[in-house]
Amino acid sequence: MDEFFKKKLKSWQDVEVNIGITGDTGAGKSSYINAIRGLKDDDEGAAEVGVKRPLKSRHAMITRPIPK
Image (cartoon, rainbow, N blue to C red; front, side, top):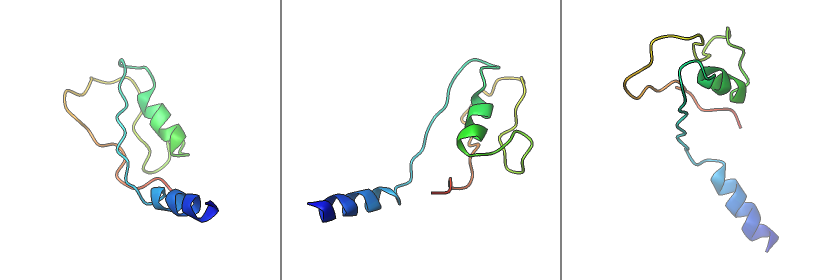
């Protein structure tokens, strides 16, 4: 039984997951994305923060995998 669960847990480590973050302008979406990625707002590759014009289309902010 332990081996079964170990295999299942291992297989989930390699699954690609896409997550959508929504909210009002200035709610802290970009700061949240940076926090879960372990980045500070001014780090290279961090999502740009600050109240700006809202995006009217989908926008991919994370272009690389989050480290395991």
